[in-house]
Amino acid sequence: MIVAVRTSQNAQPIPLSYAAFLDYQRLTNVFAEMTGYALDLAGLGSQGHADRIVMCYVPGNFFTMLGLRPSIGRLIVPGEGDAPQSDPVVVLGRATGNIDSEMTRG
Image (cartoon, rainbow, N blue to C red; front, side):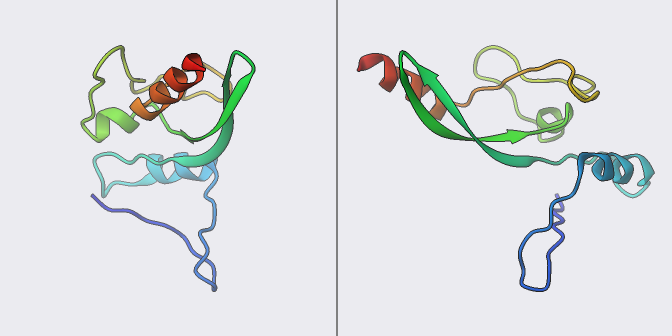
């Protein structure tokens, strides 16, 4: 596995647009597959209480390329959500389930 991050002169990460990622993915003949992610913060709420959560935007091949399998339900699959503003899917992690349990307990 190779992780590539562009950085500025002060070592801060420089964001790579989704369009640029798709270009890299389409134009490479070195790697069998490429994937990526973008971190963001959001609020997750229930019954008048909200918590801040960290979320990632990922392409459809993210989980399959990493060989990950869900403990329940399903993950997104290659091709799903590839077009902007299509196939809105959320994959909740175990920690998110714990937040929901804490919110419903009171």
